[in-house]
Image 1: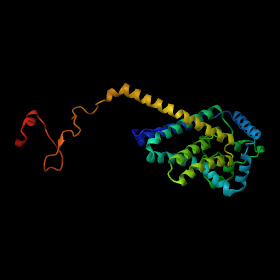
Image 2: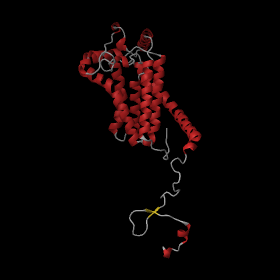
Image 3: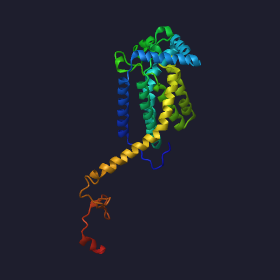
Image 4: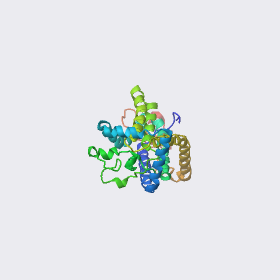
Length: 299
């Protein structure tokens, strides 16, 4: 999504407001998208059976490894509970400051993909592996190691606030989707080999974490990547649509505010302020016709 050199640097406060509004709408919509528990469980089991058929069910060995090895399970729980909410805003701020001409396209891609993920939660509520019956062989590592963190037995929500999250919003995995976005941004715009390596490692690590903690199936992660791909395709039309809407609003209402607060103001940029010989501070000069006609020697 190339930007020309004449693209304007975005202002921080409208961007902050826009991101806050979109995230609030996403969070509220995710809560409202809670489906029937029986339907969510059926979807989760269907995904699990499909993975077993395709020999893609890597969740079981990873979950057993994380459950039996606290040195892996506890850091993975902290990664699941925090990185999703720390790395993504950090990359947004980094792009805003270091790559302002690329920022708008990247931000639009992230937002469109997030809204597409909300559609997925609504159409296909899915029970994560950790909430399936114990007979399916999964252990909720975050519940097992909850004494080490602020979460309880309801995903990464702080204890007592489990009702503020939708535990059946597993398909697609936006943990993986957002991590993929971060990885692409860091890999593409990072200048050092270390940054580029982190850009590759972060989404891969996230896939392992969400599966090992039994919060997502492998196909949830695949769906998260697919949502980001579709969001990338739709980001450019979304940007053009936003630009057309902005131009329409300016055309419709801009004239009402044109010149507001400028009545009586001088059309000259300097506002009539001039500096005479020997003066350090410009002073306002009354330029009448008679004064203009006065010979320079007489002034």
